[in-house]
Image (tube, rainbow, N blue to C red; front, side, top):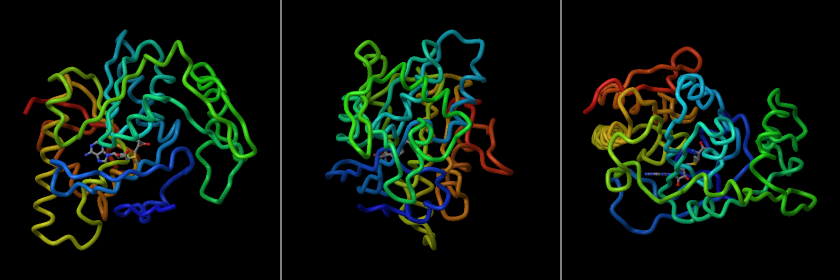
Length: 283
Ligand SMILES: C[S@@+](CC[C@H](N)C(=O)[O-])C[C@H]1O[C@@H](n2cnc3c(N)ncnc32)[C@H](O)[C@@H]1O
């Protein structure tokens, strides 16, 4: 099992949890951004980094419907987490650049680990199968059971599938954050998330040369133009924890690019790590 796509190893100590999906995929040749990493790391899990997601519900408390685009959705766990948290209020779509990830997301079958096979495995505690207790475990497990039915069990994990009556709620499609315009309607979404994925658009993590920095800045600038295009005025853009690292990670580039392209921070994690941004003007 490989963990280290670009810089992924450097991020491991910050991960609060690490089970869920561990799949990987390699991009074939195509018209990608010059800094796009072709080795895709599709690690994800249900109820990951919920703070940014909870903010969406609070921010749009007065709205009956919120249209949400979950970018870098991998195999779908983040999109389903939002659906479970927001219920009927949410109309969700998901996209990822990886064809296999999108196919798995549309199939909707998930393995939830019952015990930790190794030290890093912690994520499924959110669903109540791990050894550690999470304060939200009971609520999250209840929400999960409303949307997923158990289809199998062995000593390591239980298998679940999205319930028949829920499966059409979310459609997943293949798209690239650096070229969203052909795939989405302008100004269609209240929220766009692109969490724990921007490191795929960096040419490296440390000691970037000046030409590499300039190339990366141009790619991030274009990403933010695409996000601005997809969002309604006042819409929210949500990042993950891995995206805010401004010393060796994407945070070096993303905050500047968002500010240049009509966004202001509305939720910070810790002292100075913006994870939710609001669109304040068209570009
Ligand atoms: C680590 S997963 C993040 C999954 C989920 N957002 C989360 O936070 O748990 C990163 C995902 O980004 C996707 N990705 C990488 N480059 C992309 C791009 N240019 N456009 C869309 N998705 C991309 C990968 O295929 C992978 O599924």
